[in-house]
Amino acid sequence: YIYAVLCTNLFGELELSGDYFVRLDKTLMTLFEMMTMSWARLARECMDQIWWAWLPFVTFIMITGFMVFNLIIAIVCDAVSALEHKEDL
Image (cartoon, rainbow, N blue to C red; front, side):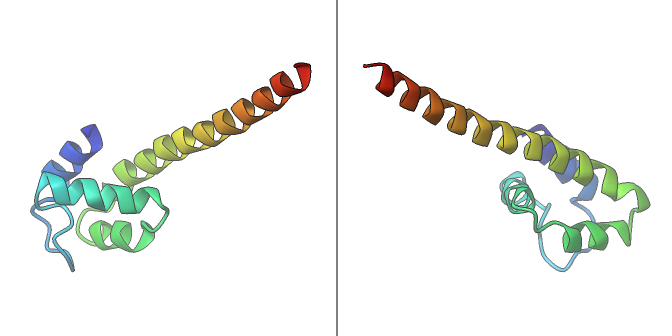
């Protein structure tokens, strides 16, 4: 949510190929799409107008990538723990 507000305020007035950052709900959807690693085209489009636009995008990708990676690790650890507990019975 914090990055959605940040991107809406920073990039809402830019003339982009789509209305990615015009409203908060559209920004949330755009950030969700960026989280799935399809962010380079949009970042370059913003960087054509604002040179430092890469900074919020890269930090967002790093943070969300770390969170998703930890989620996957937690699921694997839970599955291994469940198998080990099942064998003890």
